Image 1 (cartoon, rainbow, N blue to C red):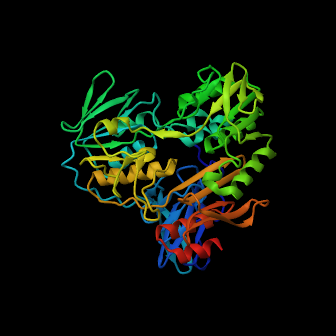
Image 2: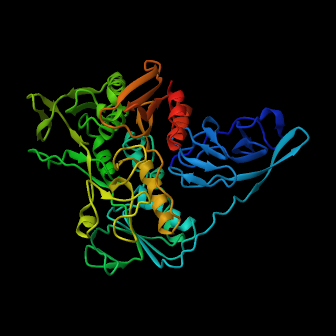
Image 3: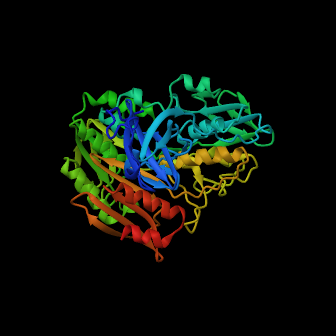
Length: 515
């Protein structure tokens, strides 16, 4: 995965700094040898940890402090300053920690130290845990189970043919050609063996025998479990029009899908993207980075209006048009030919390649057959437990309560899936951790990152503060007198502070942040 390899800047903490330079609640970025280090003061305590996020190398000093937690400005990973522990996805790796000494008015960072160990809960009752799914939620759950002391049999049954990968990158830098495939796996191949995680690829689960506690895969092999996590994710909605099965038509969900698209790009001059949602528009941006002509077809009058509101939707459209994308909105595709796409209005768009991104459906079939409660997703409680004891669900397939929403929600975002996987794993071990964090996602469009926290309801009104033209603004989504979600461009700290306010359900603080 990508990390920031630039030479660390700032003061040399081995030589030290004046203690008065670091005030309570403040952070300073510096270095120890060739390592980037963050120095932070929380009351009387001063902490020194790695200065870059272990997810994508974000500069932690540009984030915010929340007590003894630092939050990354890029994708909202949380780290504990006392232990370096990665508290919340998308970062799954901890930060290194150093000792700090003060002599007189001089603060110096000295030797590296071990982080505080995580307390291991009792796990003797669980001899075997099975995770169905090899995506974000499943992978995060497996890592969490091992990091929190589970020592029993741990099996991941993944229908995918590749090990868990950085799926958000598939439609972004990897597709654009600026991220090598070496960055895409979440862990090196030896990680799973070293951590005694039995990763079974190409294993499609066909049924669950709830009474005998067994999962059955194609071919008939069974896997016994004392606890089970369903992290089956979602699958792309597919076109059913004439020509939908032609070789030029592709979908993007897996690493294999991305490879198949990239393999055709050398001979591709024009691409039609069917769908003007997040995946479709990120694909469009990545292909424009390769100087390929792109037409985007969508039924909406404004792209992403249902998710981001009309103002931000128009901003996204204008950003793409500045980079040469042609939109055909208020339109659907009626036919695909071997070298073109035909729209409902009769217009014919030349195409060497068609990429379809018209939404996904949760994979609930095995859950439904096993008697689990299902409603456009697997229904779970606040601990991510299903209606069958010992079976949990997380990620794109889970529909769970949200303290800020009037009804259970299902969220199709990477960070949400990872965080739910972590929480489900801890609850399998008996920790009773409620799933109450506000959803977070980011979407990349050229050099513009949109970050959003919270869950906007249909019908919420969007209010923009700042300048869209200057790419520095915040959008508040309001309904029933409350702010349900906040989206930002160029205001990472504001987005982080909104996340904290949403976590605490502090409406007054949230209103002040977006004013």
